[in-house]
Length: 430
Ligand code: AMP
Ligand code: GLY
Image 1 (spheres, rainbow, N blue to C red):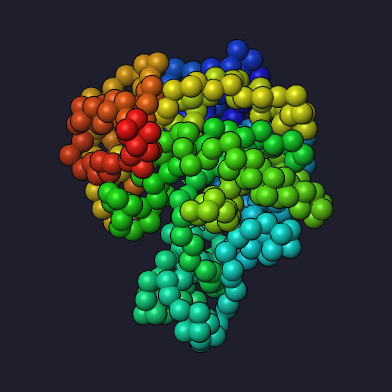
Image 2 (image 1 turned 30 degrees about the vertical axis):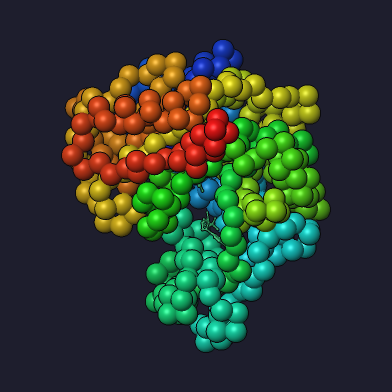
């Protein structure tokens, strides 16, 4: 099987690394890839951007690609799967219509309401005065979300009316998110613990991946600005058997049924961002029509099954008899970012002493490039140091030990990735 993986982040490094391990796979291209995928003997980077749907389709035709796997949301929301399928190419990822679950918060919230799937109360606004009146009536904290794709930056948790008013003005009037923020969803603030629940689906059958949790806040103790994710671990201890079943029955199956009712096609990864409260009630925070980043990195470390084969079967609408096998060990991924991320940061800084791959350690690259064989930073989130251990605590120690060996003067990282899971482990022991 000749495979093309689309994307350039840590997620795509982990997915393509895993795909290349399949005995069925003879060639893996990554478009455009990064410094890490370029270093992998079994992967070949090609210089086509992940949003250049026409070029990607021409490449797939010319190179007789058997299966294309889409990493990021942007090409999905812009219809890459529809385009590939029209050309007779197999493409793993939901159709343009179905990808609205991530592409439009308004669509997602209306969809959830229509299908009786639990989520926070909300209202949609295009007018700032009306939005502010609503916040005055409801009170704070409250959550303001840009309707469209805003590269993970479109959500403000406003603790005061002033913060809410600012967020509303910036999105609707200053248009800091462009078209994506000309409409906003304002929703009830939810308390609880978050978990990422990701399945692979052919539209009918859904096979869950191991659960995971990511750390979206930039700073320790989950403080500071929201980012794409500063680290993740798997499994998420909060997702026990009961919660797992609840998520499947209250969220995943009704979602697939709702998608079928709309007449949309969903073959791909479906990511439900969940909030679970103290009484174990759950609500959907968000849907992504793709795998999570950085959740992919620890999850792929634990996956024993053949990812290429299972994605291929999903495209053939043939997941019914499949299951996934897991390494029982715990996995953790610590993101090393450029100082200043998620705001302004510098690129082109040399990074040395990156530990080599072992059975229990893999450094996945995101914003890196190779410059005469030397790894240089080339983005906000740069590396994800991913390890396996008998406990989260042991995996965490290994990851931070590896982090301390990496020489890169501009590095910023959280020192507490996995802290909630480690606390739980310690409580269980005592
Ligand atoms: P989203 O992109 O919608 O997942 O939002 C990004 C992050 O903001 C989530 O992972 C949560 O940490 C937080 N968040 C989003 N919606 C809410 C909510 N209604 N209540 C509390 N936190 C939220
Ligand atoms: N880590 C969150 C996301 O991928 O959206």
